[in-house]
Amino acid sequence: MCGIIGIVGQSNVADRLVDGLKRMEYRGYDSAGIATLEDGEISRRRSPGKLNKLGAVLEQKPLHGHTGIGHTRWATHGAPTECNAHPHATARVAIVHNGIIENFRELKSELEAKGHSFESETDSEVAAHLVTDLMGQGLAPDEAAKQAVARLTGAYSIAMIFKDHEGLLVGARKGAPLAVGHADTEAYIGSDAFALAPFTNRVTYLEEGDVVVIRGPQVSIFDAAGRPANREIKITTASAALVDKAGHSHFMAKEIHEQPEVVGHTLAHYLDPAGPVVRRLGVGLRPALAKASRLTISACGTAFYAGMVGKYWFEKLGRIAVEIDVASELRYRDPVYPDHGVALFVSQSGETADTLAALRDAKAKGQTTIAVVNVAESSIAREADIVLPTYAGPEIGVASTKAFTCQLAALASFAIAAGVARGHLSAEDEKKLCASLLETPRHIAEFLKQEPAIKLVAEEIAKARDVLYMGRGPSYPLALEGALKLKEISYIHAEGYAAGEMKHGPIALIDEAVPIIVIAPHDHHFEKTISNMQEVMARGGKVLLISDREGIEKAGKVWASIEVPTTNAFITPLLYAIPVQLLAYYAAIAKGTDVDQPRNLAKSVTVE
Ligand code: F6R
Image 1 (cartoon, rainbow, N blue to C red):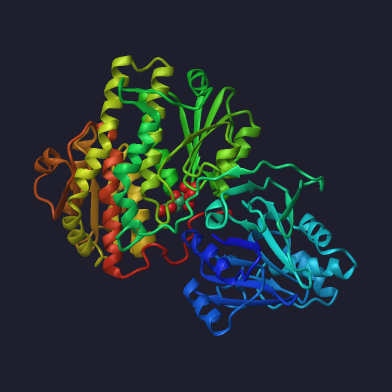
Image 2: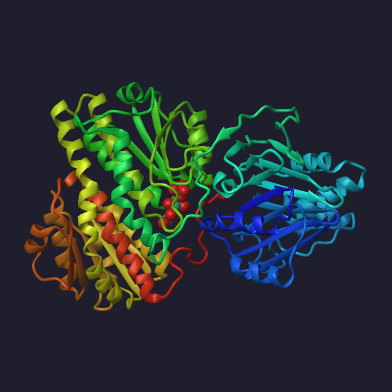
């Protein structure tokens, strides 16, 4: 998703703007640009493609100036061309924008009628012309910016600099995050604290509707009603060091390998190994769980599949009715929320627009809202009643891996607590389940040793045009996750199915050219899944079976198999996620795709 950076500095800012943008590369983008004030004049450099292309442009034509803005764009309105890249500028103002301006068509017609001419296909450019128009009516730049922002509808954040106004930077937040960085002689604006980390750890998160006016290092914030607002300065923990791949070829590989450690950190937060028991949950969560009439779960993409696994756990361990839907549907469905309902939202970034909107709707309708999030300072974390953090650390690869397993670790701990709070699990049950969970990091580490063998199978899978995944029970969401992972980074068409659904249609797709990945832990679903697998093999299907030793032995001859350590059935989703990730990773490597930044995808989806 787009990234914004702005600096009012004491020295040339171009290099630092590009550095800030580099730190937001993980969000996904397809063009980039910066603008500075050179002797009071707006100068900009833009380029389609990655930041190295912008770097090459800057090498040819360097930019000077102490005040500037920068942007990485993930195309929404208009292709990723130089002309559509930000900053957008008129003779008087340059702006960078993240999100969508919904009323841009009306505003554009109005401004065109007044003689403004537009050069891009973007919605963003309208903001530059609107500010210019208001300045033309005699308004000071900051006042023009405030009035312009008040006319924009949609969910966005924005930053701007003005011709002849050295040291002035204005930003606004409405629906998409924007942070302000403070230093003694400089000030900054960024889409997240991570972008600002090389410059400062003193950060203010703007609230909805806020406008920030920076003059030199002086920062003034105004609320949605235009009143001066006092916003807290927080000391962030975002690391100033540029995250590196730690010897791995890709962030995704590094993040897959970090899982024993980060799943361990997440479990350490929730479980007391001395019991073992669930020790830490958000204040007020146990009573809310005890009387909850229903649990609504919502999220997007991989986070949604984590929520789906959670559904099986909450129903089985907590005996609680669960409703689950993707956030983009739930928010518009007008769902019926019960009294004493609890609504759970899962998000790595904590900024996903649909998940945030679904959370706000559930909160407005009286639900106790709980968020499983990886970014502690994110909007979802700040707005939920109770936060259940995950400790995956920054996830840079666009395809979620370690965040998923950490979400599962948090959800599993939470489901055990729900079972105890609702009187369905005894102290003995709690101990056993927690003990199994605590073994997960060790099992993941052990399993990772099989990486070379998985690479070989993945190279075969990479030759297919279509791949199917199937599983039952909690392995069904893993089948969906496996298919999502494969398609998003290798661009191979893949679908996940509940194993029992195969003969209701998808089995028609089976032939020798379609590998079927069967996720079948040796649990109480095993026999049924294996029957479905046999049906597929009887029709020529080429099966890759993922199971433990006993499962593989019982299943008989298959095209290929991956052996996962034998564990308590409860924790299999955490473990079986790893082969699914590695298969996708090595299939993508075999296809030569851009694993960390696959085409068309963004890391943090802040538009709906
Ligand atoms: C897939 C992936 C996405 C995200 C989804 C939600 O690998 O990463 O499907 O899971 O966009 O994002 P968050 O978790 O940030 O809300």
